[in-house]
Picture (spheres, helix red, strand yellow):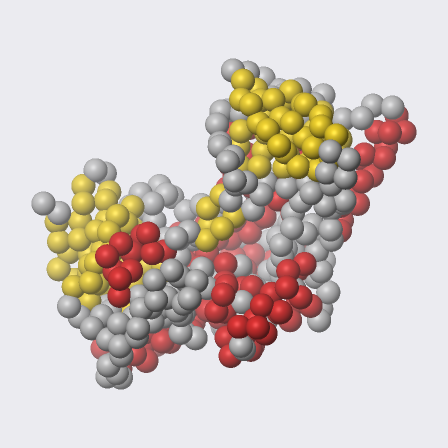
Length: 435
């Protein structure tokens, strides 16, 4: 029988990546000035054994694609002592960073910042804890958490899901000993007992280009083949006006827009985030390929306008058939490893919610109906609050799973929980649409 925690938390967070870390900070800062009765009691559960964020892609030298000012707090509270600048000051690198003249720290340094912030809130997070069930229970929600083989029941008035992304693979693709997703790149490379002779990377976005560059640089004798459907890598649009799609106000505009306008905005600005690459990296890869042609030793091979049509794993590698789409010509490549850098997708929140999902309103496509404050619409008899950090791109726009709006979103969720706790909850009875 599962042990029961008798406390009823105001906030129970599932997942402790950057999004719920930002929420934990927002709660901490609220509690510093709130009266005792207005303070929020929050707890977070993370299935990893320690804090970690996309560690398989912390390639040395790669930089963040968002400004350090879009850290965990600054867009919400510029005076916060949890800011990236406060981190630099404590690490005695503030002057050095200023002299570096960049808005974009390396991914390794930013991960260290996240770890620094998470360590300061170690008392509100339980690592190595997997949420296995979420159930309605009167005026609160019961969450079953498994840790060290034992289950415990925790109760909360509000649950905030920030369960991150999962690997997106082409239809029919299967991972294996020599077939990886880029999310695991550095972990799997460390497992190799000998250097590969040929690597294949599938994908046209930033992660694919980074994986290609990393493998080409790391294994100096290996051939690295980059396979993608476009004729060339497309540069990301990070120009000032286009970047307004990531502004907090853009979330208001997107949420208020009609479905047709939302669709148009997504299509207009896909090139700010999807299947695009930083121009500097494109030029670096092109330069390498060109210089290899000059020297007559082609290690970096670009299979553009192409697709993978067959993958056959072998005991010591994988055989990959690549089709050049304009002509239909096929090339069979025997490789030591194949890396799918084909993006990520939001995890299915309904699968995690289990029976609780029956109380959640859905749109005509089966997606959660979400209020502006990121609260899932529920039936009138459901008393608890379910909030989403991620999986709301269809209602809130491009920043749903990105860092750009994380600080502001965390503040909005915190403020919603505070406001709703203070006000009586109106009766609601949404019709549920099954997708």
